[in-house]
Image 1: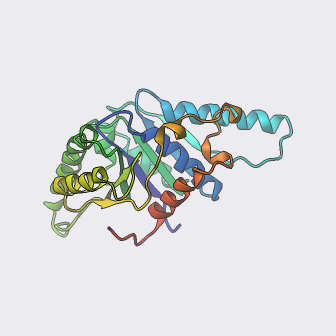
Image 2 (image 1 turned 90 degrees about the vertical axis):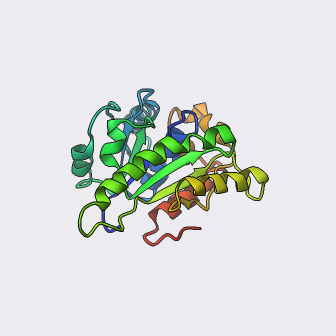
Length: 240
């Protein structure tokens, strides 16, 4: 990877798999040898709690002489009203990949990192209620785009926004309707080729791993996060 990459995960609606997505992508990236940091901007602190527990477990295993290599992921919490732009700029000096798990909606934390984001990943389910929650997030992104486009030389500026469908089945009527609805909201959207088939199962981590996460065990569903990370790290990703 040539430079630090920033991936922001945001959606106005809770319970769509933001933190589950961040946790598994971050761990998969760490296993690939990347230096990974996670910023948790959601008051539920799901991501930062997971990684604090995970890092405590790593330290305990090392003290007990466990030689298995379990890569470290840095994680810290910042309140949704915080401007974290300077923090992200600083982290980019020491890390290859930075994930930002936001509260969603229109908080200052989200707004402060839109321009820094290499990609804004929006996990969403294909039902109508969930899809309607795309609007508030896309409005914030469009507002930032329009302000930047006012500057000379930046008229064609666009944020790389990608939709990740959770609990989705390709070829179904619901999947097709969700694609159409998303495209109506913003014409420059991209859609991840990877879908996450069963988000509920992925949330229920094996208690035996004590917070190490799905990507630390030989779980057949780990493959979907491997494929998703491949997509996000591609330098010249093409929209569908």
